[in-house]
Length: 123
Image (cartoon, rainbow, N blue to C red; front, side, top):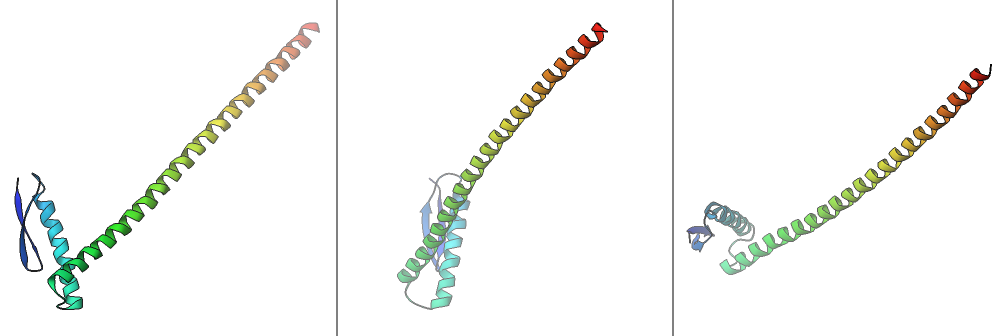
């Protein structure tokens, strides 16, 4: 199993990961380190454990917000799919109505043509 060294807050941590996940884990480590460093600049020396907990809570808050937004978007997608299905059904209904109207008009035209041809034959 591959291992990488992630640096957070100036400390190195050896971490195992799946094959091919090394770069992803290193990128996540850089993200956490950036957040950790930003909080350290904002709050100063408040202790490594407290800073790590603050970093974790900040990232968890962002993850929670992203999860809620994801759920909202999924609901919006479902509503749009339902609207599309309803619009398709309405279109099909209108198409059928027009086809029926055309068929009825064709029947009337045939009757009129028959009546006209009957009238021409009698004269």
